[in-house]
Length: 368
Image 1: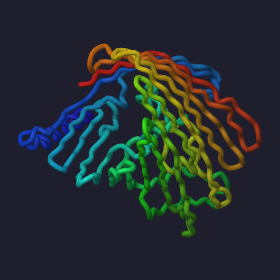
Image 2: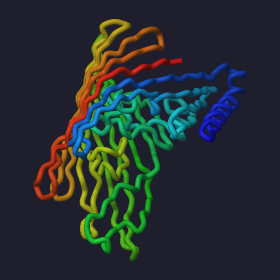
Image 3: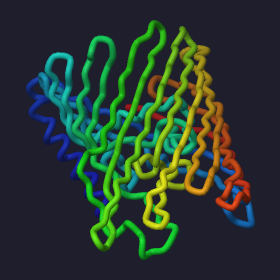
């Protein structure tokens, strides 16, 4: 009941907020969609970390990507309220912006500059395979942002809340640096997109820092960063896309989706000293549209992390999907794919099979 009341309150508030503008300029737009999963997924014992494999039917509303929203525009002022009616995390977006010339200043909760995936698999939360090499796991964040057309490139700069978790102390607890954390800078993210003939080329980078403080007020600064390149080449009915990135202390940066994969390696504390981790990832994807009704899309992603004492593990995924447009706003997408965890190499040199997960099924979506 409380969840229902909260949803109703959010919708009523949004309508009330937009009503004056609608009457004056008809500048409010309502939108939304309903999405449904029909999957069979199978994971082996190594993937599960159990003595047995597991096969399940997933037959449910997509709780992550269903949405209802309102866009408002009144002169140089824009706003967007978007809610998720099913999941416990209700607000997907809530932001306002002011535009002057070629520059837009925004504040609120919306998409990060780092949300720039190239793959389109919809098995995990609408295609966010950020755990496996694509750049999809930063999603949305609170921010003060600036979007600007610089002529030679489009810029998106965001100042976001600093991320301060993900540190692990693996030695004597008396030396741990986790009694407190101090922050002094917002997390900084920048995305520059260039138009290079038929290709769109994007450069992105981000920086996060905070101090770890122990019980006697000694501190060390833990920094993390991500930087990479994204390329997209559309040619008629064909689209080719690729992305590559490198990162230090990716988990401490706050780049994580689902929290189940190790590829976002965090720093570890060893005898009071911070030992950094590294992550390298890439993804490739391609699409071909046969007609207005049918297209095909396939992709591959790979990530590998390394941390203290030469611990490492790679992981990859691949998929193929066939979006079918039944009618305007109504699509059904058959998809099949596989997640493959590579061997985990421990500090002592031993290896453990990471296992595999496969899936196949349908994804339904109606836009309104």
